[in-house]
Image (tube, rainbow, N blue to C red; front, side):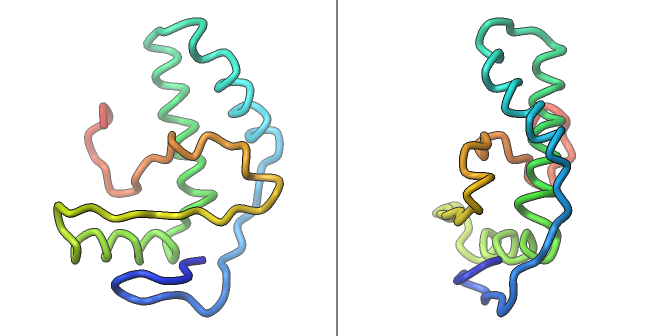
Length: 105
């Protein structure tokens, strides 16, 4: 749910199905990530980031910060996540912005 943005807000939250096993795998990835740095790890991080993006920024939610970013331009946009208790320890820093086309982004 977007509480407030330069382009508007949402009246109701968007519900997203959660794969608890996938979340457990993502938490494990973070626990071991710094022990090995390989191409396989990088692909795992991107995969985790894409999944987290689908979970935390489904398209109806994503559209508001994306349009807000266009409006504020290079000054940047601050995003504050208000997460359910079961999601607070996820590595939100891995979020993969939906419209990125460069796989190295």
